[in-house]
Image (tube, rainbow, N blue to C red):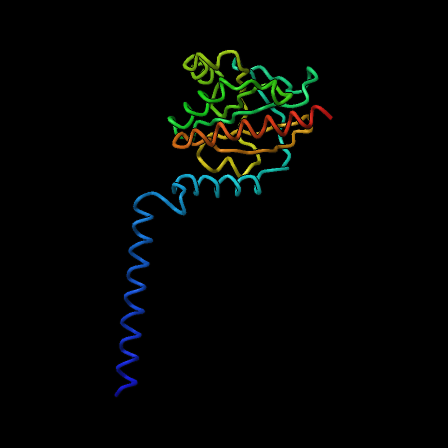
Length: 201
């Protein structure tokens, strides 16, 4: 009987511990905080790492690019070595596209030894021109139409940034999140550090 009593006490205390821990965990979750970081921050980091692993180092299987007037052109014909790309699509969230273009418009691509470029997946150049006109700050950036490409990132339903080199190789993929603007700023700062170091060699 004495053993049964002690076992019962242990079980009750264990159950109480589990209950208290679960309540604390739920409070952390409901307060949008995980280990001191917001849930959005954690999820965005995980998503970013996942996309880097899936897309980094892949080579685009298409070089078919069109100007807004739908005439074909080559991306690297003028001797450009590297592009900083904002990829947008008709399938992306509109608010996300607006945010991605807004942030992209104020980036100085020369800091990365690159040219800024928007590659848009839309049915016609006319639609792309409307988008370009709507974002006055981005008017100086080249907008080109490029249909589906062989990147897993295309399936995310969100705009994304990446570096494209003259071998059509993709690197440094990043999904800007309007809820975490500091992460987008941090991405561009890290890019600047990386390519400044590379260009100085």
